[in-house]
Length: 310
Image (cartoon, rainbow, N blue to C red; front, side, top):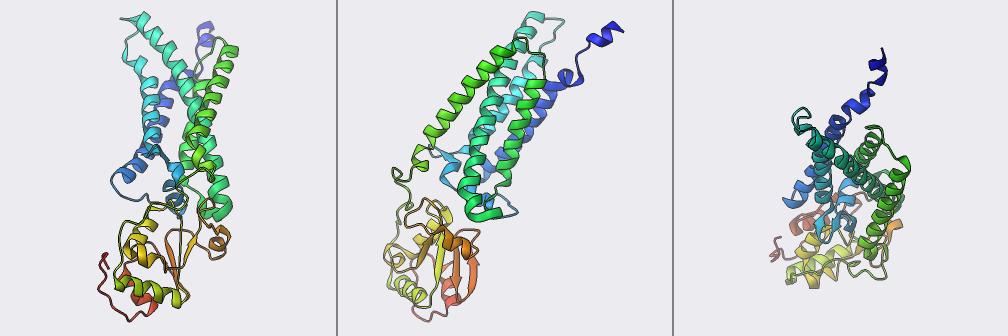
């Protein structure tokens, strides 16, 4: 009976397996997003919120998809959880004990940093997207990742009998502060539009023929508008189809709150959920449109020898 009382709780006996399982789920989530970013696809989303958030400047760190860093973090957590189990305690008990102690500390540091950073990203999603677009600004992949990070933190806390809770608390505070300061530093330019240089988007690299210019003027004459965001890659593709000269003639509404001449309330009133969205003759066209499609939708009858891909 005494041996049963001394037996570790179930969650402590299985905590490393549980942590590894959650970390693998997180790796699959972030790995899918990373693959779509690196290979030119789009994440499947129940709403347009995922695309808006995952295409925003907050989804990149130094030009690298943020999801790639998340993928590496989840893989690291899985490795920390499983590494000691690869050592047979009967054959090399000192090594097994050392790995147990060091990896538990690394698991705590990693899960704390991931939890704090995920909380910061949830704040960004709520303040920059949900408040502007409502439910259309929700990124379900981001919420899933935050839940995985929270679960990893809880499992790490409950997964072993920590000897020095005070030291653990102090370590957690230091890790949280470093993570917060680092996060604010990485996103300083985005959070302060006055110092950001990308609030009008990348430059248009194509030129316009008379056909593109004529179509652009026609679209404006019939009251057509394009709603978009400066950080939206598909919006930039649309601009390149028109070219520099023609794009100046297009009526464009900037929906990103920190964009140049932003009109987020106009976009919200118009019910815009994805970018780009064209409003032509009372109808909405979502996604990048060919110039021929815009010509047909607007009743354009001018020249159609478009030089930028029609």
